[in-house]
Every structure is written in structure tokens, then in C-alpha cells.
Length: 257
Image (cartoon, rainbow, N blue to C red; front, side, top):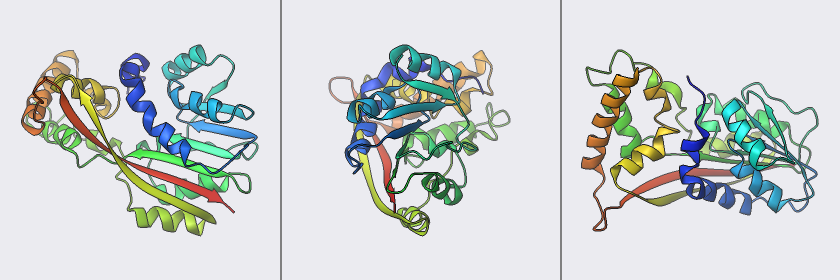
């Protein structure tokens, strides 16, 4: 799959940063010495960590060179490095690990989240936010269009790129067994977007990536046209031409004993 497009992602920087701010607001730490931003992307969540904990040594990790380049440009005083979250382990246990909108791309949460929590210093926090929107029309229609004859063969594996989240009870159990106290909640954000093309632009840099990557330019154009037409049936337009996009997200703050 091609590298992430930082510019496309940042078209909605304020909306994408708000869940990270809400997540950090529930972190009960006062003065962590070390913090890691897993899947830091272009650095928008990292900037929030630096602002909230100015005395912490903060490191941002991501697998995307393009995202890291943008993060280094905007936060030149912060350490950033390329890393694979699936295999990453800290050299020194951090007091805070933030994973904002990244772990839904990784499998086996029953093992992954306890492993990350286990890498914390005593009393440290794992703070996680994940989109919980696979059943929303925006994402259901990606899969339905991919099943249509012009796209079916090329996109046979696209729907499996994201992990289906567990139940809140599962995350509570997995992290409690790992010796953590767990704070869980869901929030549905309502994003006003400029028409149905706005929804396409929103998901193009995230959820649509596995569906577009296997297609050539002509196939991408055809897929996007069909997808946008399906969105028009699913999302009514407001009187002023905007479309409201509900976006559910799952939040977890787990504190290690």
C-alpha cells in the first residue's frame, strides 16, 4: 500500500485532533517523565502531549515516512522515529503511551493492548482512541461497493485491512487481567462536511486507503464515483448544502498498578 498522504489527512486537522484532546483530558497523570505517541501521524496528537506535559521527554513513532516528515517539520524539538507498533517495545518503560486512531489497523487486541500496558512504568497509563465506525454507512458502503462486479476481484481483501473492535467488556477484561484499572467510554462526534464529496475527502486518507490502493487511476475514479453516489442515498443534505457525518469512537485509559 502506498504511503500515507499527510496533506490529505490534515485537511480536517481540527476534527481529527479533537478526539486526541478528549483522550488526554482523561489521563490522570500529573508529571510523566517519558511519553510515547504511537502512530503519531503528522504530529497533531504529539503536540497535545507536549503542551499537556511540557517537562516530559516525548517520542513520536510511526511507520509512515511521509507522516514523520510532516511531524518533524511542525515539531522540530521532538524526537520522532520510524517503528512498527506490532513489534515495538520500549527500551525504557515510559509513563505514558498514547495510541490515537492507530490500533484499529492492528490485529489481536487481546494480546496487543496488555503487551503495551505491560511495557509501562509502574503507575503509567496507556491511552487509546480508536474509530468504532465499521457499521456506519460511510464504511459499510465501502465494502458494498467493493463487492460490485467491476471491483470485486481487485478488492477481495480490502475489507480485512481493519480490525473489528472487541466489546467494551473484552477490553476491560484484557486490561484488568494485565493489572490495570480501566476507564472506557464511547463518543459519537458529528462532523459537518461540505457535501458528500466532503465525506469522500474525509475517509480518503484513512478508511478508503485499502480500497483504493489495489486499483489503477481509472479504477479509483470509477470506485469513488460509485461510492459517492451511494453516500448521497445514505446521508441527507442539510439546507445549506452541508452533510452531517456521525463518527463513533472508543476510548480507553488503562493505568498500570
